[in-house]
Length: 348
Ligand SMILES: Cc1ncc(COP(=O)(O)O)c(C=O)c1O
Image (tube, rainbow, N blue to C red; front, side, top):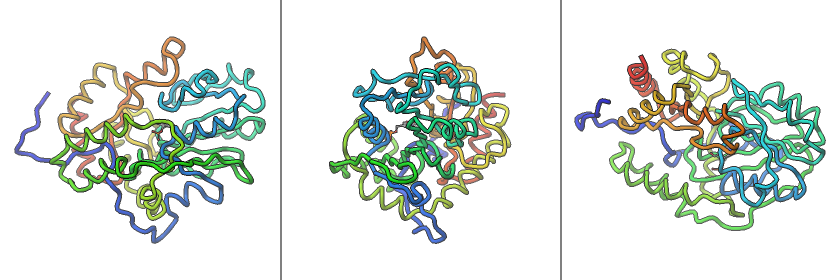
């Protein structure tokens, strides 16, 4: 591995978001408007709390989750009611074996993996199974369009732009009983890392804000706390288009160079959480280590998943193979070219 020299100070790429500077959504819609439309919504401090609150309104329901999803979504308060379904290649939910076990009133969660739409199979399922509570987890999705009429949606905006926190729960169309947060969050603690990073564009104090952010994420829990007012204000003052355009353009630049390792099809219509590569586990680890040494903060979604490893070997294997390169709106062509060159050099 090459060790970056002190003579080339380059600002870090990727990692958690510094506080976003909103554009006041001149050409509308704002992120908040685009995500909520005309539906009722509640703003919790994080998505796991929003989801746990919804599950809390359905005391007898079995909770069906994909095996391939972030483990943080499962709270002990309902873990004994969770059952998992497998996920096929190309991130397609495989419900054939489990649907016979789903009964009226159960909740089924689908994930818009890496920000891509859930697909026609899931949409048809949602239209057909109006006896179930359908939830679409859009924690990684910026712009996948309206949800099905009977679907709930869940967002976790700090994964997509510079807000400190937030878990938006958006109700199905029409009247709905929506759980609400009832406690104030510790805004100063939540905002410390994004503000430190905002004030340090060259990343000179990288180690400090990284540790503060790690502490904040480790403290994230299922609570009845609301989203901070500052995060909500940024979501309502930022145009969706200002985030979508650059992210998609950056993804396409990376795809030109890295497509042979991509898990997503070419010509995406909507932006991805990042540029997702699938590599042999050893190569994956080597690329991650090298990029981090260059302060390119590629991520892994997810290092551990909710589904048990013994029952879901394919999904568990993905935890060792996948790597997500940053391509968000903070960056441009020069950053993407530098990153693509570095990855190509390591893999060829
Ligand atoms: C798909 C997905 N849903 C939900 C969550 C939980 O979001 P939060 O951290 O806001 O609770 C995560 C966390 O990584 C996630 O990846």
